[in-house]
Image 1 (cartoon, rainbow, N blue to C red):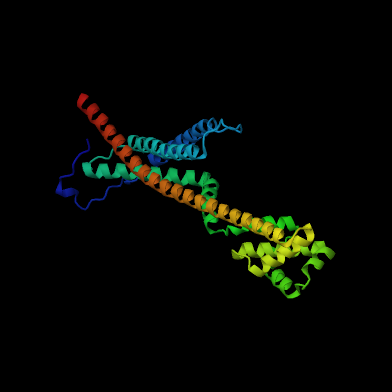
Image 2: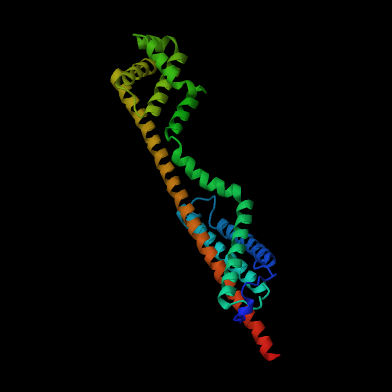
Length: 299
């Protein structure tokens, strides 16, 4: 084990040997990065066997997600343990240092090795990590009605969504008294106006009763059906739009929860990985000192 400094003459004397040895830190970090890449490739290969384009032959999305999360945690811990152990074992022994100080320096070297490996791996896989977290943030912050708005805009063949409100209120100003005659004489204008009404309603969350009646009048004139049947058809379509909005909201909320879970588990895994690397470095340092002490005894 390490020696103790008990002499009074050593007080105030500064050693010319630095407490930080970058060689073992870099070596341990390199080993940790390599182990991470190997384990990630192994996990990707095993994960691909769990999915299949054929119906009924693929694992569920929840199973695949949970398995991937557990594997990422295992990768972090194993690579941290390897890097920390090599860092502690490869560092040269300090002479005349208290045992507690040796323990602290070994754990500090393991922590630095873990930090360096984490920074390198995060830099290499930064785009993937940013995409993973960013997808949840975008899903949580995006307006779910965009899906319904985009669908109706595509159906109408229009790309003027920034002017949606202006076009809608313009239609209100120019709305004719005889909507049926307008629909029969100008199909394109009636179709575009109905599309703007649907998009405005999707954006606002509801369609006023006056707009519902107006759309039903146009539908009755265009489809050649009674007013009551047209109103039923309009209500059914609006309900489908509402269902699409709710489905988009549900998907966005699930994506938000998934991203939050991944972020929290990732942070916890990194903290545990730092502890594992420090403990492994301390273990490697103790074995290093024990081996050197045994050699001295045998000599």
